[in-house]
Length: 147
Image (cartoon, rainbow, N blue to C red; front, side):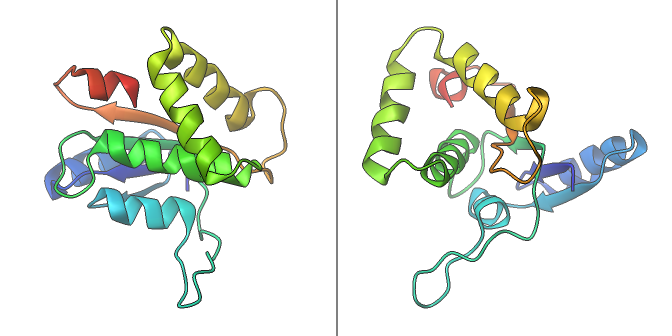
């Protein structure tokens, strides 16, 4: 699957899915941030062990305003998951997130890292690649830019 669409509005999911499919992309939809995290990161069993996800995504389109986890909150949790896969611990992931949010130009650095993880630098598709995440919103709040 190429693109994960995340929006609590079913009409938006349907419309964006139709457009992307006509462009030749395969899509999967989630109606909440929590559902998106399960699709991207996998789900935990009764023993707390995380089963691997069934799909890998190159792009995630996130709505900003959703009940439960917002788009930026969902993006942060997905990034933390991939940092843990890369060998960091949870404390390190949180510290890295906070440092990135404090630094000017952090968004540009994240874009470069995402491009690298997407395989644009020649990495094999079998590695843990952080999908490129794009927030879809009319709002330009600080939280939206930081995530």
